Image (cartoon, rainbow, N blue to C red):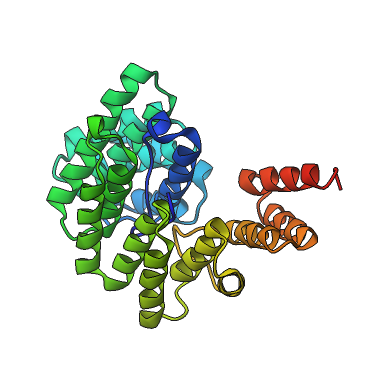
Length: 317
């Protein structure tokens, strides 16, 4: 789905329901949001604070060891189990994530953030499941997001997850365009800027480029240098073939801005630059952009795939 920032996040799943490529896009954006800081617990030990600092410093190996030591000493600490679940998601270990987050939920059933993270874990698990299990996990994912929303109705992350779910999932597991529109409306009520971005994402996903452009223009009037709106405008150009020069300018501006938490990376912006340059008939420029994306992140598969396709289209050169 077209990118939408939801707090620092978006989603996850509906695996082969919506196509593996769509799933991977959702999973990438969803995981980025897991890096967002979580609220402090009411009472925090020095060891817990140190472990949490490692997590927020993006040192997952050290953070994992610190939280596992805390878990051994305090197996009934819901906060510790929560962070261990998030770390498991970050290293692509959904089985451990489900186990830790189910434990956290049983210890702290009133925590919206735990329900939200458990929904993510069920979504990741659905990616790997067989067809029969996938449906059940999808329904569990939705139920957790809905519980998180009920506990914290103003949380934009949760509304964003629900928007993605409803727009991607088939009706048999609770999806629906009308439900996605309703979540976009809720987002707009809470935060007009991100509401415009939410509607733009829905319109982009459905090929309604004029409507998407109108939402993005409204967003940029509110915040002319907003990274996400600029990226979405570049995305619109890349996938529609329209407003190419404006898309290039927007993405180049993104590259001069810091990447907000959970937003598409500079690698993604370079990749989309390459897409636009290809549409403009500039394969040399596109190759430079794809190579720049891979220099920033050698594991950024979309750029590698585009570079390979470009080489094949030009006789390997």
